[in-house]
Length: 454
Ligand code: F0G
Image (cartoon, helix red, strand yellow):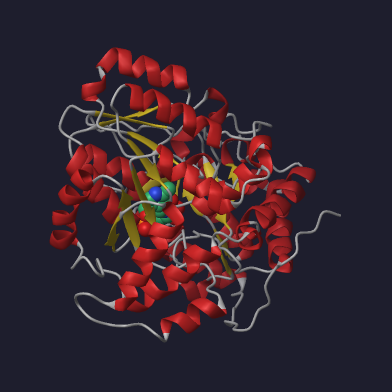
């Protein structure tokens, strides 16, 4: 049996409870069938996200005790800045309170009304900020990226022909920047190859187009470049990271994911870009030496970034997710393949093939799985989309239930429990009905919206 090994030991624990099914039924009803609205006390395994809930190491916790707190000029910030320069080889670093704050700043500086932002695939908050600033998102993922089951090792790759066609249609001047999201979240945490980024970068540079790299899920993508891209198998994670940063103009990240801390940042070598973004950091985030982050989190992030250069660390997520994907596939449960990073993704379109997309199969599956197991996943389908300007639904390409595997948090037996309950639900899938909105916010409706059985 292909069993992944934990390359760490557990030294601090948090008690969990598994509430009885009667309580779970009441809880999911109170939450309007939206797992975002469940309370932690009603949850056994929280697989909602890998954001801000990764386990910290002893070294991270130790560093947090040394934090040098000051509004301006803190030593703690200088340490982070040095670490960023060391790892990414870029000069300028701006701290922000989380990933979407970086997206706000990058979009405000580079997106003008009428501009286009091509990207491998959108993320909810990234797209919302671009649209808010009058831009349009164009997805130029390779076709294979949307195939739920596949053997393509890099489903997050950009299709160069699609990018060239957009440049021909709109002209390079209308393109605000090209965004590459590493560990592409909404298609199942799927990686891009280093070679693909080289090609994207060459094409963009030939046309004077900026490349913006969303590095939030870099840890997983580094692992996949190292293990799936033959030409990179002898490169260290540090070398791969350095090459990536040499190919892009702006890097931003959510430190809730990258570095197992909280906060985020924007990195660039361009003084001009830095100066434009810097003003907005002081306006929206805080002074330049904390940017809305707590000083303790900055200490933890500095150590966390260094740990991300360790193969034993970055392999944990993908290997445990790989185990879940393999076990579920063996039992015939429809999951995204190949296994990506971030989490295991169930294909709700096939899991609940008796439900039309108008009844939000991924939302229904999220609600049902919580009910039968106490496992909380996240809907990543049409509920997570936004209506268009005329108020029509924009149905998602994929209807997924994401079961995130926060780094170094769950044990193998907990994942086995999840696999067992998911398989049971699959065998009894005819029991699951569809959902409709009863409360529907206009922006990012998946966070607060409430749904009821159809
Ligand atoms: N970019 C990517 C690729 C992300 O996955 C996220 C967050 C963000 C940007 C925004 O960062 O949350 O710190 O503001 N993803 C979380 C998730 C929310 O659950 O997938 P943030």
